[in-house]
Image 1 (spheres, helix red, strand yellow):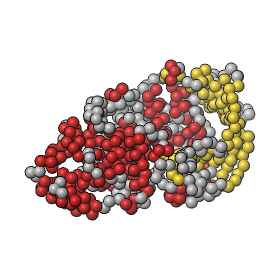
Image 2 (cartoon, one colour):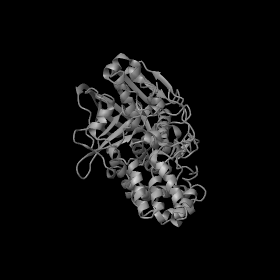
Image 3 (tube, rainbow, N blue to C red):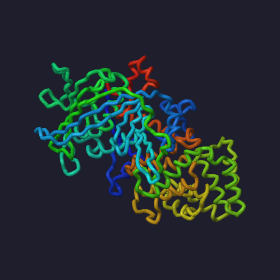
Length: 544
């Protein structure tokens, strides 16, 4: 059974960004947070719930991967597919025909896709990612986004319209009012288990009602097709794309197969008086087909994602390029060389910033650190005493928490820098500005926050914390799609495994999956495994 939905009051944001930040700037509070536990620090050991990020378990499948790399991480799987064609009819509740169409749904080994679409979408339940083939100037490309991004969006929308799950009746766009049940159906998430009545007729049709006297909100007739793995995948696909309440959808038991026919009610802004949608399976046949990411189809660049801000596109592209070439990440020698170059031009502030940037790769230097960069920072600090520019910088950095406006006034003088020094200055400024604007939305109007993040990433695209902090800010602005792309990039970069972002990302993904398990399917490694162990076809990630 689906677990109860809990909507924490916190808002995912940068450290120091208060829960009311979204409402300050006149924007709606998204209402849902995935920041459920305090951020680990180098001085505080993770608790027993910290995810295992050992070499054996830590694998990031992100948007930077090309086809061959994606399939290699996904694993070698078979090419058996089940092709199903459906007739879909829509009628008003009084019987007026509203339209009809046919769709072909292909169920492969761990994925479900649909043929004939201009933008072909693949729901890959093996990797829990949505792949979308979209047009681009140089030919089609493949977007690659995590399921949790979509789930987070659904949660935000549900929380917004229900005021955190407190309203029994909600008002949708256009002023139309609905029982909360119908937005739960549209979003695929719900506050608590719905009270439903399920019966089976003499004709072996399962009918699901909200009350014994009510009309069926879902009815289905099963004939055993694809019982087990294929049926579980089909049910997961329905959760992503069809507005059926998750508790009603749970009556589609994987062991009884893909329905021969199913019908469900919809109440929405486009159908305020309600409509009924009926899917009738016209045909089905087994076949063979390779995973539907064609050879030669490149991963999408940043401009193929739905991102309007050009600075955010530059930020994402810098990360995509860096994640695809991890061997080019700077090593300790690179940080030391940058600091030495600054020292030669009598610029101790630049030297310190270049060395400070390593903290955005590996976390802050600790007292017991054996790093040559950390040792050099101590030497630069000692030698910089008496230099006005250096002392001003140190004063500004020391006020990052206590007086962010003062810190920004200092950091502004260093934003022109490039390389490692510029990366450090711009990222520090971005963090300070994001936190300051949470309480003072009009602070420093001459500074563009997203440009600061982008400048930091372009100057040093291998710093995981640049993308992590940018992602947290995007999430605080309810741009969860961009946030999760940036989280993916942060986790894909070298050395990220040891940083809090990786632990938090795993914990947040797990939380979202626990809150909305119907969007995920526990896929066994091979089709043979599915036949040997029926329990794997209907795993813990699916309602029963």
